[in-house]
Length: 125
Image (cartoon, rainbow, N blue to C red):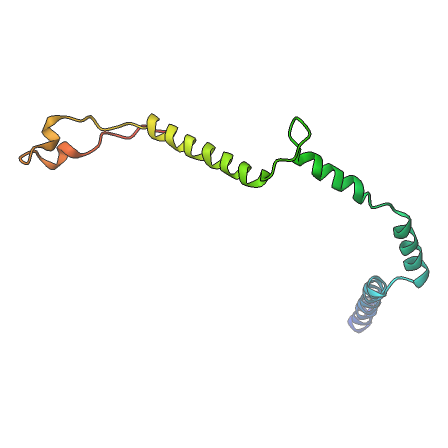
């Protein structure tokens, strides 16, 4: 026997309503706050955990010490100056390694064409 279209629509509507209700209940269960017992248990565990703050401070101080165990008076300023020196020396190396146009006496003549002062082709890096 073939079900009527009206009965088929009712069955589809009923299954749709059941699915929407199930999804709504699942979403609501995710948004409801946890029980107080679980929260109290977590707070108790956090109180028992050690923070190791003294060891962290000791490690930070160890990073500042030099090979002789002394902390220099201005470690961050000295480190920045060393980084600046490294940057400038790398920039100087790039200038030294770049191609320079050939210099000739014709470049300095007033009657020389403009192409005489043009740099040569650039080298690919």
